[in-house]
Length: 121
Image (cartoon, rainbow, N blue to C red):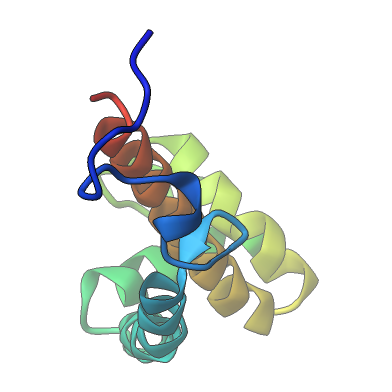
């Protein structure tokens, strides 16, 4: 076992302050990035021209009772459209919040992977 003998050695008190295991600059980045991603996801979902709009249209058809691959068609698997059709059957605005949830979960997963990769040293 080695002890800290040099003034250049890092101690636990020298680390940046953390909240929920994140540094302050990463929390600021997260707070600034969330509104940007909400705008990106919202514009993709509400437009019927881009992929998100096509997925939304097909899922709305499934929620209205159309049969997938017979009355409405796109080249994705049924689970993909089924997961989006469920909130559309309840309320159309829930689909947007579901997309925001997917982006948030993806960001959380990427952050956890990055943190585990950085701590692997």
